[in-house]
Length: 99
Length: 150
Image (cartoon, rainbow over all chains, first blue to last red):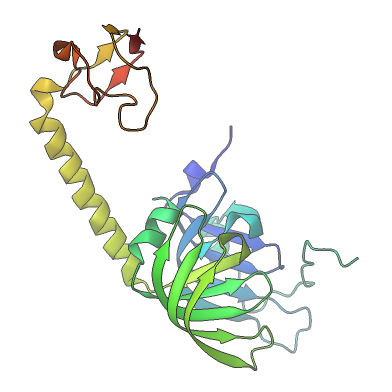
């Protein structure tokens, strides 16, 4: 079985079901994928070049498993080469499709 | 560290909760349980659009409605401290009970008396039994105890 054991104490990026991107150090998790992120920041990336990307510090963050889409490890080296303020991208879509 | 453990160490601290419907609640955590149901006090509830506010003295939130929680950073350090203290206590207890730590495997104890039954006697020798010397005292680990109560 694969679990998040390998990501503990590492910097991870989490996408939530409401299409938000969070980044933080994974401090703990459980069977329902509830996770603890310390030094968490929310990254808001805009598609248009006019709007500056945002990085909102959130501190200690406990996220409920039901709202997590994916958790990914951050490659520190690659990450330093990127300027997160300049990167643009299309907005993510939420997982709840309107009927 | 388990998320629910962190949450329990956050009791009587200020927390912010965002619910699935986008509402957010700011207040002091009174109690929590294993389903993440919470009771908060001195709560300020904000509507999803961030415009309306309501002050609520006490509120109960069902865990499955929570999207996420934000906790004060000190809680992390506090929880790690508690963890260390518990570990030390556990080690100390283990050392103290070291001699008596009977790991009883496949014990077959024959009692005359009632079987299983009421909560008080279940798994232990609480009730009225003639053979007191068959009591498994001390140790913490008991495997495959077959208590045959005739």
